[in-house]
Image (tube, rainbow, N blue to C red):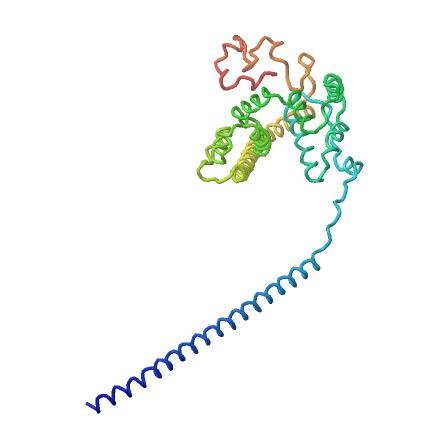
Length: 328
């Protein structure tokens, strides 16, 4: 019993010491972890500070190399007038009026024309009937048309109304090549194709429309499904048209040569006979021609065969000899 009690006493003595050691170890580990966290937090703080500094440096550098803002160059009014020099005197052709207006707007865009110049420049190039139209319009509206866009609206009402648009679309639908060359047909086709509706704007639809207007001899050489654009179709048809014209020239030249050779032979024979008659035979006082003997008609003989007793219309040798002995 004494031994057991001694052992219990020793164990009790060791137990607080062990607990103390374990607690101490845990405290040390906690202290170490806290120190590590503190070091990590300090590192993060330093990294953040460095990032802020770097960003500020970059922004400063960007601001330093950014070029200063350039002042917008003011376009001179007179230089714009020199650049845009197409007059418009009014026209009954709506295409001509629309092309002038479109060209003017395109020039304004390409020259970066200020808005306050546009209407004045447009008015500067009006002349004749168009100038008189504007004077009357400006008087009727009491000078309230100040912007170019308002000028365009009034211009279209006068020279390019909705009825003109419908008429041009009808001309496009009815257009045929006729006696025009393929290039002339293409030019007119392109002028009118701008005024068609949405349903005619696809390239394949316009290819079929172009083919339908071709002359028959050209239409047989093409198929609308073989071409991607109207321009490609035009180039092919221009080549075919040239070949057909060359063939026609060769045929005409051959026909002229063959007919000319026959005429030359006849002229040679007539010249030879005429030369012989005029040089070897005297002039007949009855008919004024050159032949020997007496004029058969004066003798009362047949003018076909020269025999007496019948007329030329009853001559038995008329089919063979008619005209062979008309003079003697």
